[in-house]
Image (cartoon, rainbow, N blue to C red; front, side, top):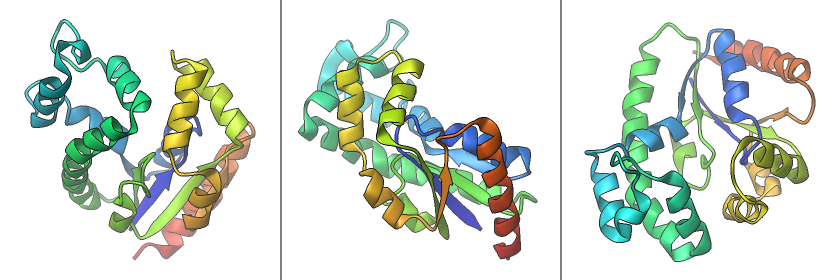
Amino acid sequence: MIIGLTGGIGSGKSTVARAFAALGAAWVDADDVAREIVAPGEPALEAISRRYGKAVLQQDGTLNRAALREIIFATPTEREWLESVTHPRVRERLLTHLERLQATPAAYVLLVSPLLFESGQDALVERCLVVDLPEALQRERTLARDNVSRDQVNAILAAQLSREKRLSHGCDVIDNSGDAAFMRQQVSALDARYRALAP
């Protein structure tokens, strides 16, 4: 069984995924795959550098993610172009990872993706789990974690599905506004439920 795990920026998706992994779940992170497909030598990075030039490359030829983020969150049409280049490649690579993970003895597999619904990756999963917390807390956690401006955090939040819509698509919800013990308690309950549902 594949479970899609999603949440907005700063919601703690990876922390929740690691808590499931500690209980034996297998998982793949779409963000990691998104980094794989823009590595040097990959067609997606070539397309990006052709469009934006050396401004989006580091000295070693790797992608300057901060520079690219500035461009795409300032201009929605550029974000759409980037998604048209990256989303199909991410999906293809995710399918490869998911097939490999389904061959492991894990009772279920997590597909961790911030854009699970926006990218159509929810079509790859049987259930959707939303990691939720108030938007103000998302904003504060992101500012504390990432070296980005408040304006950029607001732009990223605006580009993602609203909290209400994300929750309306979810089968299950983890409230991640509390401490780690509260989160792990919810993960443990859902782990038991997923094991019971798994074929």
